[in-house]
Image (cartoon, rainbow, N blue to C red; front, side, top):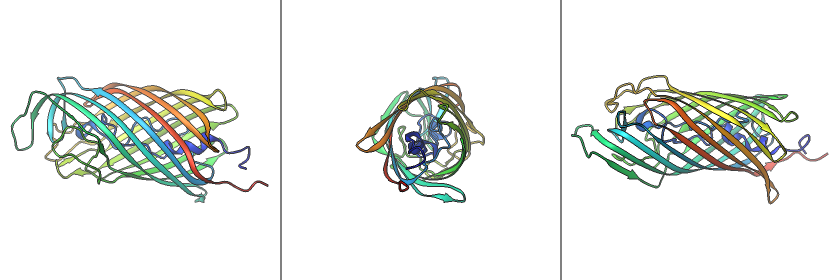
Length: 330
């Protein structure tokens, strides 16, 4: 056994902490108002990695609904649009492999995520397109498609109750990108994110206080010639454990684009966005067969948005180990 036994939350939290769920939030600044890093994933236990080697699975269902007023504009699909409304329903399937807990004195975790999503977009006015005149006064677009896969790696250390984890993720632009369309889940650009997370995780007192911050470095969309600026994100969460099965808390995030959009496709200039959000989260631990599993709910409401959509997101995830290499019982 592992000390007093493997803690379910510690086994499963890394699927969010490593940035494995982040992907394609349809309302996060830059080209099309989208960002590779999914805000809200760095919640409770953001820096806690599994204490044992193994393979772990997370399946997250995600919903976002947001809009921007008819007086504001964004560049979407190479076109300037006004009065944008966007909804996205998505599923993110994540696999995490922990090959060793003895790398540079810490735990190594590598993995990937594959998104399947149905974005739905309404634009009240389409003003212009590169090399062409303005189009219709209103337009709707929707699809069901695979997005770009992500690769990720994390290295984390533990000192008693404090956990520190450095992580990186890479967006690989091989998903289904719909040229000249409003609704997309794929980015059609390379992008990388580096993050640092810290958690004070006190299992005896039942409290977790976590924070995570990082920067996303975006490449160029060759089709639209839109070079999205770099982005800063910061998240924090406080959660209380009320029983071995149930915990709940609050969380929030802040997003700020820290460099300007460039390229011929950046028809609105720098277009540097900013937004904040607050929300609640709850987790419920169960046993499925002989494996521990965790259901987690997150709901976040955005406010003070600048040059981007503003809306509400909800995430429901199921996390469980597929295989664990437990130490032999003495």
